[in-house]
Image (cartoon, rainbow, N blue to C red; front, side):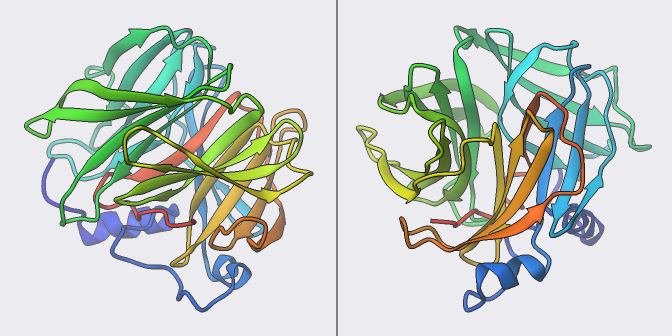
Length: 315
């Protein structure tokens, strides 16, 4: 990989709603609703039943379909995926897209390169088996913290299991390249009621997720980077959020979040502008139904590569 993003690459990411960290969208004094109407957007990616990698850029009142990369995965194999990161600045290639996904009961680090013509380079697949025992995973996310160019560069993995156990690993790297191990695993129980989550904050001292429950409540789950792991849970809403099977979020303004909730039963999605989260006083403004069909089995967030992606700060 060479350098940071070129002007053309930055423009390309802005066009699909992945704003580099140096560009803050809207001033903190504006409301969440104004921030959203000023151009906030969420890049909602998915894996189709046929194993294709697809995406939609969701803005207020609109959804634009992005290029579909076909046959990335075996048909029906992907159960859960964390967010993917994209790097358009790879010498000799048109780009690189990678992340982590659970196929069956096994976790894989998955990625692929694009040719200079924008097609998938089928000669260079890069899929690495992390390990088995992931069959009961209901949610997974990779948090990538780097306030470029300042250190540190932190990558953390989170898993939610069906029994309500939330686990965290710290990634340790060799020369900043090949992963050595998923280290310092820590866990906390008590999250069996959670249906799904979305990351809304990533800071030097904590990560925060917005989670809905099967009973309809909405919570923030702050996970300090301290050891032992002790999540801090705050109720945001008491009801009406149970329909969403997937939540995808992106930074909106300096302190807010644009949230997309996806209902698999109705194959529909709704967008929200969420103010800086603070328990039940959090401002949430409905932005309406997203004018698109959401029929894929797996949804997740798409973002720019670490160091160019804006750091979420919704709580």
